[in-house]
Amino acid sequence: SQQGEEDPQALSIQEGENATMNCSYKTSINNLQWYRQNSGRGLVHLILIRSNEREKHSGRLRVTLDTSKKSSSLLITASRAADTASYFCATALIQGAQKLVFGQGTRLTINP
Amino acid sequence: DTGVSQNPRHKITKRGQNVTFRCDPISEHNRLYWYRQTLGQGPEFLTYFQNEAQLEKSRLLSDRFSAERPKGSFSTLEIQRTEQGDSAMYLCASSLGGTGGTKNIQYFGAGTRLSVL
Image (cartoon, rainbow over all chains, first blue to last red; front, side):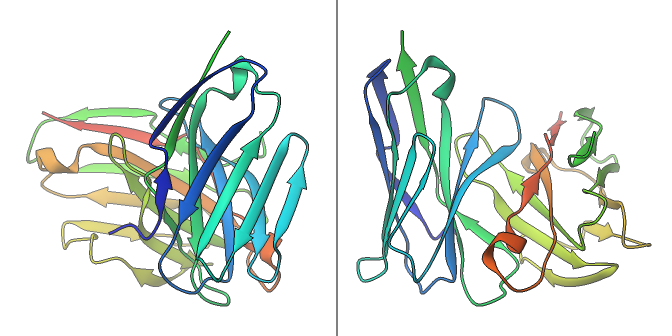
């Protein structure tokens, strides 16, 4: 079974607006990663945040991590049509753990 | 192309047939992973290799599934006696491995979509 739960399951916004997606998980983690997947394609790594970090930025992406609440959020600012995709959070559970445990994803649609 | 390569991209087979998928990881990556993804779900871990050694297998990997990485480079995933429930996207990923979070970033291939009729 999957560890993470993502909220919302689907999100539809207008181009230029900000999009926020949330992820919750159940056990202690080493790091949390966000991936993007365009329909029918492989996953593209977006950003990794370690368990001792609280916030990280990469371009228009901002990720926060609250280990006390076992939750993370991904903010995409100034959204573009090309951001339309599914977004997944994935947790690496223990130090040096090899497998990623994915949530069910958020389907983001950016309307022009 | 220096990314993860998977072949074939699509496979249609009849129930009961055997299928084999291939994954070529990024060349300097020691770790290779297989995941399975069904429609509307996130990927689920199947198995993982460190060089040629298969170090972890999910309980999702039934006896009909076998994976190899004979020389620590490419990997194959074979499904014997396919069932309709095996229909899914099979994703391969690779990583450098080692300490440090960025060395454990997994880079994914485009996947092999299996349809069992």
